[in-house]
Length: 99
Image (cartoon, rainbow, N blue to C red; front, side, top):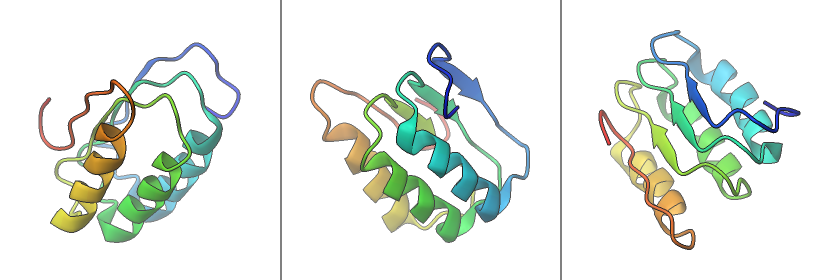
């Protein structure tokens, strides 16, 4: 994802990636400019992993939709991530089980 410039959608659902994997994904999202939709449901990332993703979304300019359901993420973090996506100009995003 760091160097990919064409991938627009990625489905990583149900891979038990965990918080450490979410941190690595967040590092890639900080520099990726093409990914628009990421299905990251059911990966057991917890609050720690969600915090890494939230930090990455502060600088990522391409991601429009991030599905995070079934990750044991605190509601406040889900809301923060959704707010980060929704506050971008002319973007619509959903965080949760479905769009």
